[in-house]
Length: 78
Image (cartoon, rainbow, N blue to C red; front, side):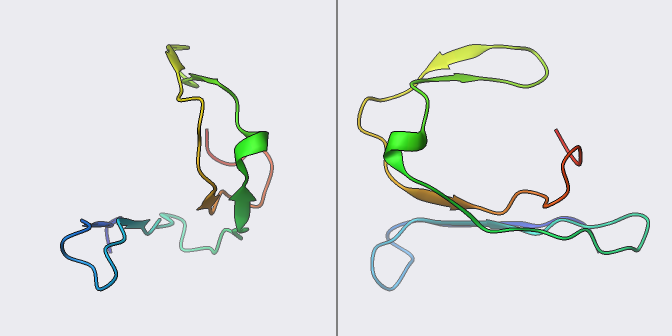
């Protein structure tokens, strides 16, 4: 099964929320543990730097809290 991204706009959700979801496959057929991370506004940098190209982007001064599910194993992914 391929990776899948699901995007729901505010006019398509029940409560007006914008939703983004994505699944992640394993070619080795082994499970890679995940974790749930809640990122609060005070934890966020004002500048984002991309991992591969090192492009820097200025971020807004009023960020919102968000959740992410990065790989639980250090060194996995980029």
